[in-house]
Amino acid sequence: MLSQSNSPLCIRPSYFPKVLPWLMRFMWQSRTSSVNKNAQNLHALSQHAVQSWRKLTQDTTLSQFFNAKGWLKVYQSDQMFDGTLRSRQILDQMGTKYQCLNASEIHDLEPHLARTFKHGFFQDDSLNVNDPQLLVQGMVDLLVRRGGRYQQFNVDAIQDINGVIQLKGKRGELLSQKVVIATGAWSRGLAKQLGDDIPLESERGYHLMLPESTHSLISRPIVNGENDFVLSPMNKGIRLISQVEFAGLHAPPDYSRIRKLLPVAKNMLPKLEIHEESVWLGHRPSLPDSLPVLGYSSKSQNVVYAFGHQHLGMTLAAISGDIIADLLGNKTPKVSLFPYRANRFGWH
Figure (cartoon, rainbow, N blue to C red):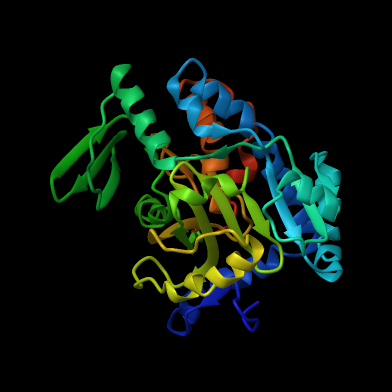
């Protein structure tokens, strides 16, 4: 991928020495035996994703932010589609439902797509979110209405002092009997202060919004299998999502790479208006085995971790919340947490 045109993968040269240990672990987890095991453990969570989101949002206005039209991945070449055989075999082993579509079936599903796509991979039982910002804001508002409290507080230091967790920042300190660390790609530093050295890395991803007039061109998220980018219909337009960039948390964004994909997206969806409305960078918190960290800190029974969901943060958010709520309520979670433990990599 690093050498191909419009590559979806980029490693900034100055960051390569720092990310190399993570990449070595990632390669180790790419052995067939590890891939099969990690797929099973990821499926143990993802099979509850839709049900958990429906449970969380039922009887609220939040359900309006979900579409239930599945997602589609399309390919122009036989060779690229044939290269997905191994991943399809894993899906078969997991019992995951999908359909392989021909050119005519793709056109019936998404008539505005270019007629150049010969193969499609379709999952019809997936949800997609049409406005993540309003969904999250609505969840916060609902929490507050139900008696919770929201306070924005930057945390620089955390420690367990005789069973009480102290959080310190520039605005003072907070004390709590229980704390959940769910701070995405920024979680590693906090966990390390508690004694858990977790190999968490940021897979930086880029997002570009196209005009609101475009959102009705497609009915569901569509992945371009050749170029590894996504066109996703949102309330305010179509979102172009792409790139995995390794450059850490602090390097400035490089928007040139996603902007180079605009002509490719136009070829994919000829009626697409490629005027840029906004563009931004997000951090995917990723571990070498593609599994999150869920459960208690290995050093404190007063701190619970919920981070490292890589490309599936929104997908696995509700089931992760279910699991953490059960832990804090002294109930047995529906999923065994051993595969997601903080010290599974043996880093101390």
